[in-house]
Length: 184
Image (cartoon, rainbow, N blue to C red):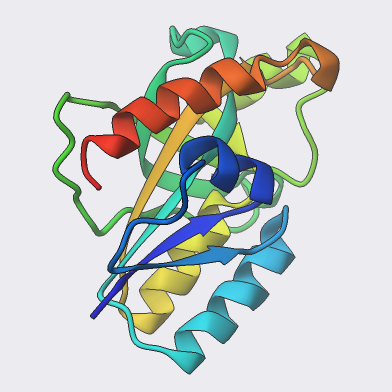
């Protein structure tokens, strides 16, 4: 059974695998956000069986996390922060990959929009260390279909900084490529 490698964007895929996806793996570009991730991943799982799925991409770190731009982390749990505290919705990683170096394990929040202010970032930082726009949906769909799930993210920015021109996307993708090459 092949592994499924999941990216939100082609930019992330091309930054991590510029020479193409490794043999024995399928690749899915879901699109950005909770809805497109849930929908496209569900469609993929209905069409083909997978034992393992790995979501790879960039993320923002909360300043209180102690993470630096370019750090690569393994997300152990993820929730949709805008649904808290009204609805508990934490989803857990269920897979493990043989990384050559130990990755810091973190809690993630999946957001509908970036923190935008330091105050919001600080409040969200009490819940998790990083934010993305797809992680909780990825874990939830994998759980529903019985697929082992691993999420690996490289930090491209601090979460309260919404000015994409200041993000270090290329630096983050270069670090991510180094780590991912150690397992494929």
